[in-house]
Amino acid sequence: MTVTQPSDQAARERIREDLDSTLFVEAGAGTGKTSELVRRIVRLVASGRTEMQRIAAITFTEAAAAELRDRVRIELEKAAGETDSPSSEERTRCEAALAQVDAAAVETLHGFARRILAGHPLEAGLPPSFDVLDEIGASITFEERWTAFVDDLLADQSLEETLLRAFTLGLTLEHLHIVALEFHRHRDRLEDVTIDVGPLRAVDAGPLVRDLEQVCELRASCQDPDDGLYRHLEGLDMYRRRLAAAETDLVRLSIWAEGTRMKCSVGRRENWDGVTPSDVRGLLTEADQMRSDLLWQARSSLLSPLLAAIRHFILKYAEDRRRQGRLEFHDLLVQARDLLRRDALVRSAVREQFSHLLIDEFQDTDPIQTEMAVLLAAKGVDGKSPPWHEASIEAGRLFFVGDPKQSIYRFRRADIVLYQAVQERFSGETVRLTQNFRSVKPVIDWVNHIFAGLMAEETEGQATYVPIEPWWEPPETTPVTVHVLGGPSEGLVSSIRQREAAEIARIIEAAKAEGWPVGEIQGSGERVIRRAQYADIAILMPTRTTLPPIEQALEEEFGL
Ligand SMILES: Nc1ncnc2c1ncn2[C@@H]1O[C@H](COP(=O)(O)OP(=O)(O)OP(=O)(O)O)[C@@H](O)[C@H]1O
Ligand SMILES: [Mg+2]
Image 1 (cartoon, rainbow, N blue to C red):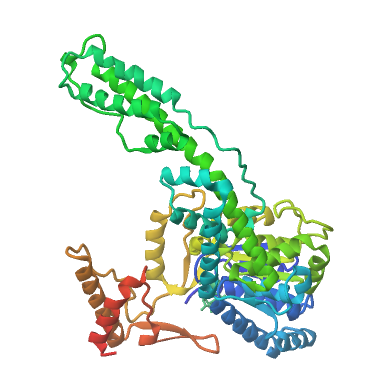
Image 2: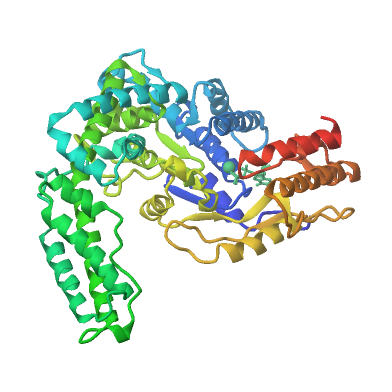
């Protein structure tokens, strides 16, 4: 190794030393983002700016949080034991921090939210011994409530006509169930939404009937009653008459909704006089468009009262969970956010309790995370707090770390557009790390090459690829390469999966047998190269469906 310092050393020093600024660090995988976050925590404590128990370090998963706590502990131990540079005062502070690290708020956002709620249950309107339901329990309870809601909905006289019409137009209870689940998932956004519910509109078939009548009269210009277009118009005329004769809105709607085709492509030119088949077909296309527009309007006007009823159901259910103290996982975030939003006293108490908020994996942020971070870092605001993008925050309280390319939790509301907005709003300049410590040059070259092409352009919601630089050279003895397995394959998916699995098993066997080199950092910080073991190998797969053939192949290869 010829270089002695990472090429981005200045950025790393800034993270450790510029402790009184709000920093936003953006960097690729394995560049030491989490390591630098840990070092910043140690510096915050060692410099006497704060204490470990006043720091909140938030990451995305329970596993990452446990690892983060361990890494903080290890770095604090190192700093407490160092004899050369830090002053004895700094060492003493790190020792004190070590005693606090187990109880410190190094946790997931949900854990942090729970901590805030547990500290202020009465203000949050929760019974002091509130519970958090697991996912299965939450789902069962939701379905029970939904069933009861549907019974009420179907018995509700004021919605009877709306429902009849909606069902006539193809709506099903399953559709409503899907809407309810989405509303439930985003219940925190429902409160600010108003749904206007107007009276049911009369179903006016007049314009469509008149249009069809005019087109159907054009039959007189056709000489051949066997002409395809002529026959089509005959059929449509029947349809028009039924529509005109319909006595109720419901019947009119059901005729509208029939799949009767209006547009057609038949008709011979020589059979028509004074008007061409193509003119007639143009008029039919217009009539068809009119029918679709009318249907669309009818459908959307019917949806409003139903959406309003579902919104009410979801909010009422959330309210009941809060009163009973039986929260769902996501409720932790919503309740903590709401509490911080509305209660200036609690807000200032929590702000006093936590002087610094450091957030790892910020690319997977839930919108509520941003809001909570800002609420806790905003300059003293009394009463109701302003929206996050208007708040002015105290410098140095917030520290964000993220890699937009690694955002994987979109289904859990991670939002890259929001990530970028926060970055712009709170950091004058983004601190970037580019040196990768995890992989060796040939692997990184391959990754840079592939992804620079695949993620070439920045579009909204999609990060561009930023190349990373290797820190470690590959060991001189064995070449390190990227193996691409397989190649174009034909046959049934199941047999391709089996072949793929067999290749995976073979390459694992080769890695072990040939002793592929693995770099390992020793406790002393020195890196040694050793032969690969099975424990070094991870198999990543997009879905679980590919797992059984892989298990089988591994069993066959290794008898595991
Ligand atoms: N300054 C450094 N010098 C040498 N090795 C380092 C340095 N910083 C971090 N590392 C090592 O690099 C590896 C990756 O570090 P870390 O987990 O902090 O990266 P990261 O950017 O947070 O990764 P991810 O993108 O997966 O979250 C670890 O093995 C760590 O020990
Ligand atoms: Mg990390």
